[in-house]
Image 1 (tube, rainbow, N blue to C red):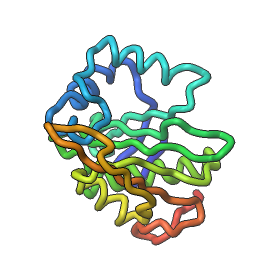
Image 2: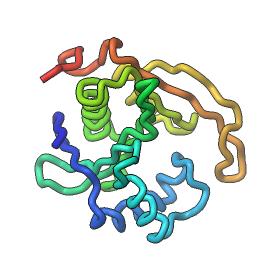
Image 3: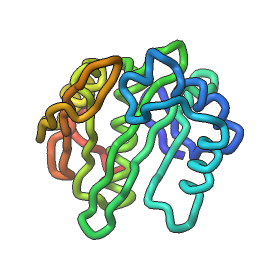
Length: 185
């Protein structure tokens, strides 16, 4: 179990798939995701089988509220590149359509950073965020991610092209949290 602040992370279970499908198909969330069509349960099950493979380079977790042990979202380190020592960060809070709130989401990202750098010995975490995703942009900036790149017209959503930002954080960067550093406990 990975734990930080208000949340803890556990590997996703098959029983989580229906809830994840509902959250990911929500119109409020889909505008921020890469998928261009609704996800079927068959798609969810094939994805789950892939990430459970011994050869998977994805570490996906359910996000649980410490107060009541309720599943509130999903997150992960995707496409881990073991030679370059980096991974793509993914997170969202599905409960109550919070998406990327300042409490649960921030605690989630800090947990993944700690896991990536201390347990997996990665050098960098990066993520692609659409320009309209102000909540995630704010959270990543508050934590200490740097805006590293810009892709024009990288996606087509709701009848218009939108741009993407690439954010990254290195193992030696200062993590902006309550204690202003990444604990190694």
